[in-house]
Image (cartoon, rainbow, N blue to C red; front, side):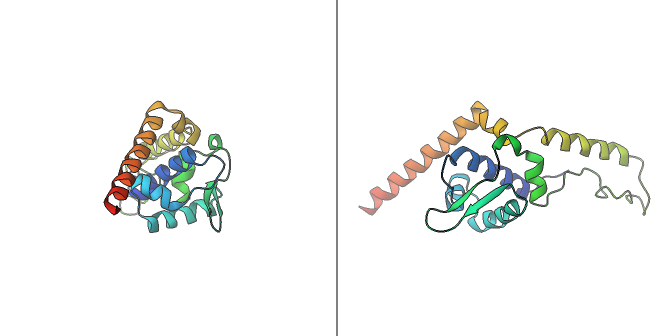
Length: 158
């Protein structure tokens, strides 16, 4: 299994949204700035996340996104699946045609591993991730870095 940037960025963006969305929607531009993820890429991801019912959007000034349900009911496996990522370690994408159209000798091993990974990721909620001390510390560091950058830009403008 190889988790691509699509799955990684989707999980990262959802953690950011969970951390920063108190009672107001969060713009994708804000997430983009904090996480260094392209705004256009986030738009694609959030379109899929919205279609899957994990986030909802608010239009207009002050608009953005917020979680469509409590963070303890959104699991990492759901996020990865929502953006069309596969949690599959088989070489045949689970079809069983890995060896000239037939199942290979290690198919069940890789299928079992895929199932274990899915179960593991399905047991970790956004609330679990946000509650971790290191997640809190990293989020604070990101905010501090943005404040320093903003101060530097303002000083240069004067």
